[in-house]
Image (cartoon, rainbow, N blue to C red; front, side, top):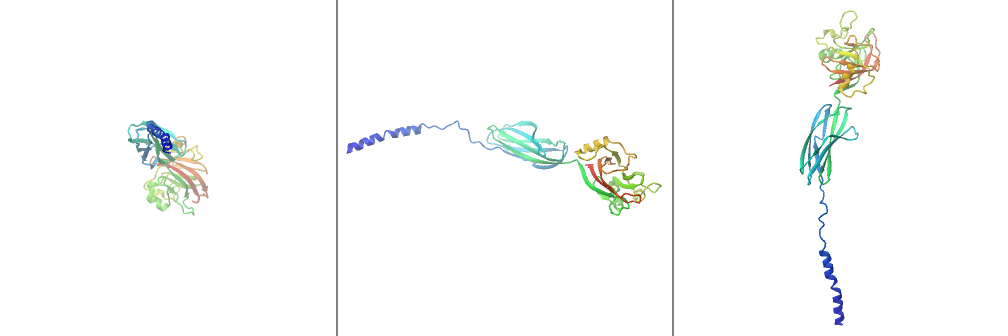
Length: 302
């Protein structure tokens, strides 16, 4: 009985050292890649409002446990496909501060998304973005109602392109330096926008005395021009307004845009040296006793 037990033990033990030998031969795999770390990127300012031709200084702070490799800027204008801005920047440290000056491109007002993408030498990448709201470099005033001097609407005849306000006869005299144009209607000129300095205002024969402009001590000398425009759809910048004036011809006299019709777009140039456009939206009720109204849409250089 004892002999049988000894045989069984001997037959089992030889497997133990073999198993140990297999375990001892397993070595660490030093070729496995190190755990990748995320690149972090931030950009300031991340929300800003500008007009055309402005420049913005952006600062990007980025880091990684690996050496950083590149930083690249792209822009998406009003949701369009992003395109690269400037050259790819080469980085060489684990922490970097990148500064860039971004010039706002001309075009339709709206939103620009500026994106900075940073990569490290292990192939990791991250992005940060800034939203730039681009305002037009001109003012836009819609449906400005101007009433003739006796119109029952009670609206004023006097318009300031600088602030978009309409003044009555009683308030205009205290704001005469702001008034760029006056709406009038008469049998000869029909629906008309005239500069306060125009000769039609006065007490003599054929002149209009009811607006009392002859009592003013300051009268802006706005000049008016015809244009080939039928809408504002092609106007994206103040330079476009100036181009419309260049392409037009001067009214005669230059201080009076007369016989205006619905849909017509005229240009004007103020004594303050700024350009504007006025589109005639409505013209109603004009007569020779001071009734009638004119509704205009106006664009004016900032």
